[in-house]
Image (cartoon, rainbow, N blue to C red; front, side, top):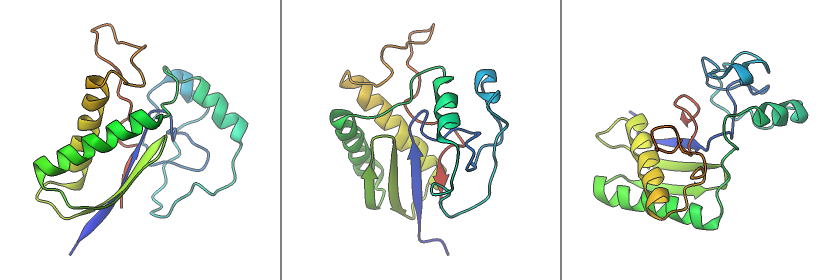
Length: 162
């Protein structure tokens, strides 16, 4: 029986789908990024962050992103935490641990009647909305043609549930 899960929610640009250390991605969405290699799918459940890699190549790949990588400042991290707390109060999630870092977050959640991926998506959406409401969305200077803002979080498949 699964009692809980460790959620990793990455910010845009934190971990690329073709990171030389591996990723959980099945494809690379951008041709500009694909020139740095195909997706590096791994099935590891342990962190691969410590694996040696070419940092210059990874930074060059990040420079090919459509938007600059998202790095939260203190106010933005606080807004994300507020959003997580509000969504938790509304939905009754059990969050046993939460660490909001400048480019990704870790949460330890207890079981809920929603699937863990659904909980993660609801938390991400709440955080994005809160950043917009407070006027501190990290990609506010990059509106899409329809006026909406890009997600400050990684694309689906870039996060993890363990």
